[in-house]
Image 1 (cartoon, rainbow, N blue to C red):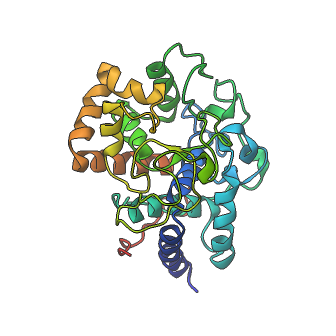
Image 2: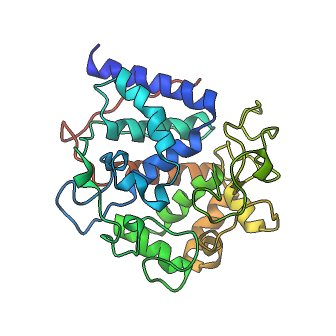
Length: 308
């Protein structure tokens, strides 16, 4: 099978797998955490971090912020075995873009050809990005590892380091329309694995998909939105109301509509799903390419994926 054919077939199977298993949120989280240790101040590769698949190796996969992500790596191992021409770094980012699309979000104009980090020596150190732990990934609440005294400053410290502006920060935050937090992972909520520890919106009997079909994958945890398997702009609306104790609102969520510079974009995205999708698609693409080394240097694109 030619390499390009492998990419196309791999993408199609990923779309089906993610949809069938309702695992979109963890695929996005894996890709974001692989990219999210990028430091624009470092010019050498792979020391700069970013989307290079270092997250599949120890010690990085064992960092506290990455708790539970070995599950997503295990999911993707089967695809890597079947489609060896697809690099790990491409596979991780491809799965994230597929996850956005199958849950009703925009089609991300992805570029492929990422070169993989070879081993754990490429993993950035826990404190290497000027944070107390987790190689520069963001915290949900104080104390903030970057030393910031408030949530807006923390978000800017983390995302400016990667090269994002305020619009990109707010747009990327909107991806919390998907997914949940768990006591057993981040420890930021009391809700945990299974129906016994589920919230009002995360038990196995809940309907969360954008197409109204049943199924939630693994039940439990606490979500930011009622329909946490639907990619839309409801995150902004839920945070703005902030009156449902069954939904998450962390300090870093509140910051988006309390900080006046963030609020410009927050209100724009709350009012218009189309505006959110446009900005999100741009920011997601940027995140997916941070620190990546491409072969060929310009990378390559696939024809737009078909809908399920």
